[in-house]
Length: 234
Image (cartoon, rainbow, N blue to C red; front, side, top):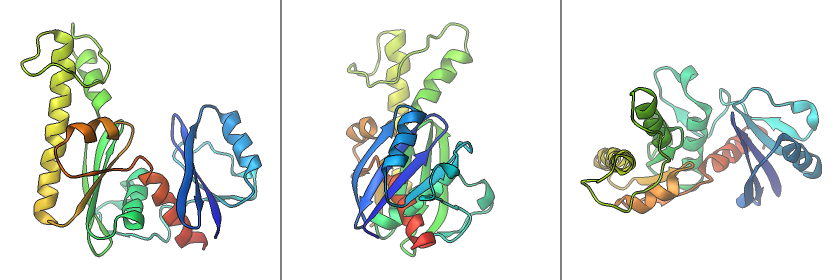
C-alpha cells in the first residue's frame, strides 16, 4: 500500500492527507466542494473517507472507501454506550495507537474539548467533554445582557485584568489551561508513563501556554483514519 489519500469531512470543512509507505507526507484543507472534487478526480490511488456531514457522494469515484467506525478497528472500545461515541474521538484513539504506542491521552481542542484515553493494552476507556474556547466566550455573550462577544486569543496582560475585554479573554484562557492541566495530572496519576497529545484548531496556542510535557499533533485524526483504513481494507 504505497500511497493512500485521506478525507476527513466535517460539518464545515474537509481536511485531506496523503500517506506514502505508511507515513503522512502531505496534508491540508479544502476551501470549497469544487476543490475537493477536483482533488478526488486527480488522485489515482485509494481514498479513505470519514464523513461526519452525511452528505458526501461516494459515487464520485470507485477509489473512494468509506470508513466504518462500527466495524473492525485497531483499538478495543470499552465504553458504556459506544453507539453515542463520536467518530472523531474513535479516530483520535486510533491515531494514538498508530503514532504513540503505550498508554496515551488525546486532547482535541475544537468546538468542544474532548479527552480520550487509550491504555497500554490498546483499549479505549473513555475520557471527558467540556465546552471549547470559542464556545465559552460565545456563551457568556449570549446568556448575559451586556457582555460583548470577543475573539478567542491569548492576552498579554496578567491577572487581575483591567478591561472587560481582557477579563473575558484572559480569564477564559486561564480557566481553559487550568482545566486541561488538571485532566493531565489525573491521567498521569493513573498512567505515569503515558503520553499526552493535543490536537484540534486551538492545539498550538494551548500547547504554548501549558506547562505540561505534551505533544502537539494537528494531524492526529488523519492518522487515525489511515490506521482504521489499514485494518478494514488492507
